[in-house]
Length: 173
View 1: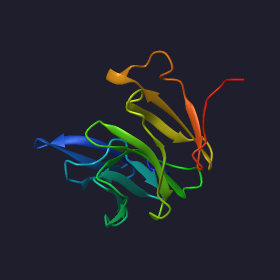
View 2: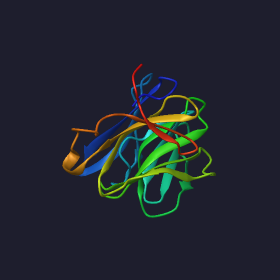
View 3: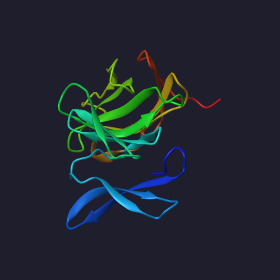
View 4: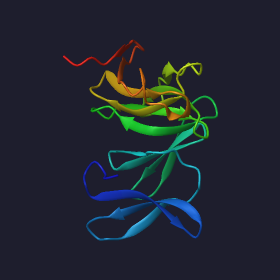
């Protein structure tokens, strides 16, 4: 993942038998381990040269300039995965997951306030949320998958949901 200013590149590396997040400074070539714990959510995000990494009930924010950390907590014991920001950088979007068991599509302000679940999976018919991304400051596009990663039928067809939780199927015009 490239930083928003293009100076850094974030990647996962297995070193000494453990997964670690590494940031490479593309100007100097220096590499720094930024998260040495094996628990971090899939698909971290960049915002204002800070890395946002999912963990249990929190998102860890790492300032790449000084490697200080702060935490943004959210309710429950899920891990934040597929983290994204709206174009303005104010809203944080993520999938709540627990060991590849997706629970909900959630959003909150980048400072951790105004948390809400926009879409909770109906485990009778939907099992995974895939690739949520803001399409503007108020709307999010995402996919659902069925049991055993089923992409057929109504699955793998995008939904659009707004920040009020109003959902509709994406229809090409």
